[in-house]
Image 1 (tube, one colour):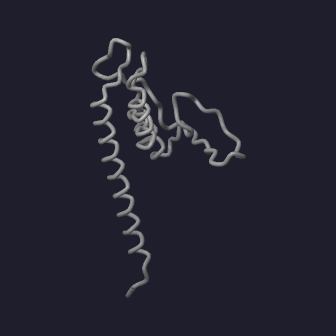
Image 2 (cartoon, rainbow, N blue to C red):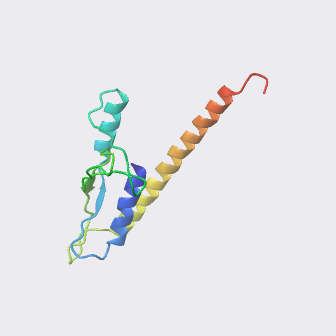
Image 3 (cartoon, rainbow, N blue to C red):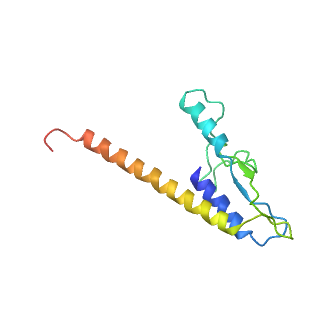
Length: 127
């Protein structure tokens, strides 16, 4: 979810001067809901395989979601709109990018700590 959000925010920044462009973001509430139902074993969504090589068969891709359908992209206009209809507010986008980076670093740190604990638990006694 965080990697998809970073991509969407980067697209917003790249289109900050495009007339009529509406800023977008990830629907985090939907992601959290899908994640909770999946964790409880009540999977309501299917996770599709991703094509990583040119010869792989590609599934249907919705424009408003990523390949596995867990992340939805929604319009999220900024606090102001320019005369040309662009709703990207650069300070808001940069703050969102910083928040996303901080959350990503936290997730990676927790993952690394849990792997370290597993490695300690798997060591034979006395080593």
